[in-house]
Image 1 (cartoon, rainbow, N blue to C red):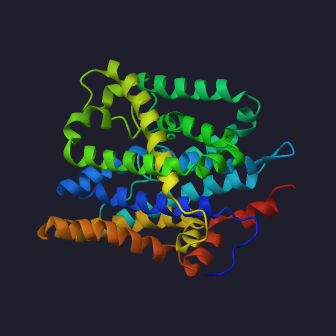
Image 2 (cartoon, rainbow, N blue to C red):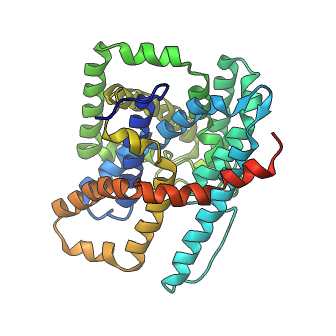
Amino acid sequence: MRESKPGRNYFIDNLKAVLIILVIIGHFSMKYSWVPVIERMGKFIYTFHMPCFVFVSGYLAKRVHKDGKLKADRVLSFVWLYLLFEILLSVLRWSFGRGFTLTLFRVSQAPWYLLSMTVWYLLVPFIERIKPFWMILGSIAVGVLAGYINMIGWDFSMSRTLVYLPYFVIGFYLSEEKLKRFLARRELKILSAVILLAAVILYLFRIQSIRPFLGIIYGGVGYSEVASLSSEDMGALFRLIWYAAAMVLSASVMQMIPKKRTWLSTLGARTLQIYILHVAVRNVLVYCGAIEWCKNLPGEVNFLLVWGGSILLALVLGNPLFKKIFDVLEGSWLFGKVLKN
């Protein structure tokens, strides 16, 4: 193993690597709903993987606003990547004869994260000026109440921006010292392992009992549009339960993450390119009928394809060649020249 770079937080890199692999597994799992174990583990992953990813994004957002200046190049880069992402997916659909539809600001798929990140970054100067208790409480209230406003939905990724805001805010306020103290508590590792094991058992063998709850974990639409809810009045309660469950599961996963440099570390430094490119790969496999053909295979083989293939795909898309291409496409070099210092 090469010598660690000074100042690099390998825990965060390792955590991001694990999360991006879970993101890929989750996205592929949605296309394998006919295999119960894949579908159920996918639901388990969706309960916490994006909340944890947004939490990490908030934790790292402290660098976005310094000396009274917001890093506009970073904000513009997210907007630019969002546009490229949407265009790429539209071109792929057209290439396979499925028509060209470009609905730039009605976001129901993976690009939502980039658009929401733009809004959260713009909110950082405001978040900094509010006391943590009130900002966290307010963001939770906004996330819960947003589900009752039907006009808040896919447009501009508004629903997910508001629903996932608490995770970003909590991550932003968490100091490095508090995070280190939490990770240093070794007794929590056993508890975390028990929690994760219990959650996996629940999702695999008792998922029917939590189906109504699972309807709200995507955060894309209001409670009235969630088919699994018998009454939208239950939406607020389930969302609060989800907030708590996602944080507990995220904290449990964090306890399992190595703090030293590993093979995951390099992968974790390149999660954005993997996030964008893996969706294109998945869509191509859907359009060419490869995933449909997998219905001919045993469930165990499909499980190995989804989980093993997702890890392999992350490794391929995280290689240096794609990084060089992504660095050019990201546009930071251009925005850095255009904007004033």
